[in-house]
Length: 94
Image (cartoon, rainbow, N blue to C red):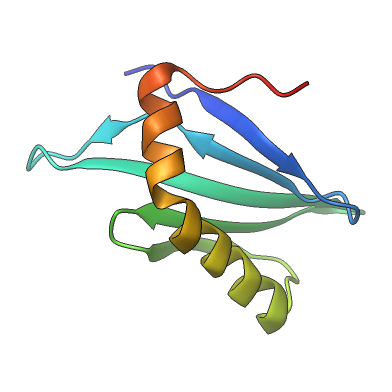
């Protein structure tokens, strides 16, 4: 499957929020990965949450606990949004 990502937010600190298209696990379960990534001098701060499990699947860099809590709330509150727009092939941002 071609792994597309769709941008949904860009934050003042340079963090970019993106979500993947829908993937399928070997069990047939559908999932989406929501990624928050901020460029740093030598790479990126990265935080990835998988839906619908809300499992953190990648955490690398220097996001604070408060930032991670905020990202989790964004994903939790937007889970239906992410699935809806992943099925539609993304969204247009003006």
